[in-house]
Image (spheres, rainbow over the protein chains, first blue to last red):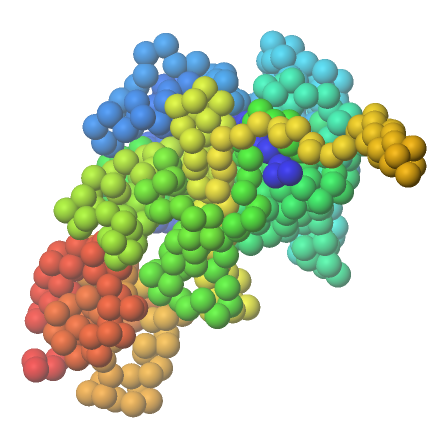
Length: 509
Length: 109
């Protein structure tokens, strides 16, 4: 029996100060060109929290504004503010930066995060109002004096945490010499962990599942946690599960650049279908390094820095309940080592081939979910509308296979997937953003089938020139079929019948 | 253009001579194709890489330009580039790259 997708949670964290202090575009600029005009101007382009909440793209990501509605708004979307937009949505929330620093403190098992006293008190007050965080207030501690925080940051043993440019806390290094435990790496990793925790808390809450029933966790972000002797030792999965309180689970980290989440979901689906585990959570935390990645182009063009949010998500894969949409593990799309590197070869391998195996045409998929980056972030930076380019490729493939007429190509490309509504956080926009809406629409009958396509730029690690891609189809659950076995009663009756026939045969003799 | 790729273009040009090098681009947008073309002709416009202030003036084309298509085996071209030819804005890319080539390439052939 195919495993099912129970649902997904999606969270965002507004981190304007982390754009300046932790995004690589900005940190590199500070290192190479500390007096640059860009660094002076970038602050003016950061958005206040209220604008991020009212931004239609973030509202779509957390489940409050259907992607079909977002598509109707003229671009760029940052020119629109949604009336009555709220922090919380049916899939998750948009967390402000101060609470996130609190969550980093809560997620810190080695007393490396230090928050200032007054700031800590303010965060405590805010945690009290938060349904999912009020139980963690005790873990925030009392905080320390600002002078102590300043001393740690000034002496270079800690990385500062800021609110509107003002120091409010820091993350200490975890080792004097180990670069993999430096304050910078620990900050990056605690941000992954804390955003992963938030995503899993929402998943458990939204799906109403019993925490104790989770057997396994797979984390699929793009960071590595470890020390100098095992740089990617791991593992975020178990660390996240511990904070959430998934006491019957263990887990591991799966990596594959942006394709990581799709690989992780295929792993989860396989473990469930094999009967190894019943409930597996796939979770991905956010990447501080990618904050403000295209900031230079946004500033140059006078646009706001829309890459001011960390993203996160969590998905629950469970054994077949006869209700939720199934993952077709019998036709996994994969770009093989020998598949070839052209975009055509990639799309053939990860989109056309699995569909052929299922006896389906490219037109039988209601929505494809590829690289769902928000075009407000990429198009202004000269990288184009990434999901739209993917849909065009799928449409071109359908033309080449004679499944649609060339004249219909543009129309097909426009309708075969949603507009991009995920932050440019690598793995976060890759394939998985559709799961929330997709599961809901399959359950309410407005969609039959969607395809999750994950692609990864493996060459960035300089270990191979290869690109990667994997995919799977999700479709309506046909329902549990009655087992066609024979009951004990039936066997008894059959034996009795045979005995009777034999007896009458003997009598006749 | 990636800083390491800039270095590779620079090294290959020094090794083989500018007259023996043709740079073939494959980027998907006219704007990025133009920037890459400018980098290997006039020099890195972002002043960030090894080609900042270095005008190599190389011959530069995009794989989707008709003049390059004409040089390729039609069957191979269809197999390797047919899909992207349908997807990308070939006219805009060709216009951008050829305009940079005409302005900055030292070889007017």
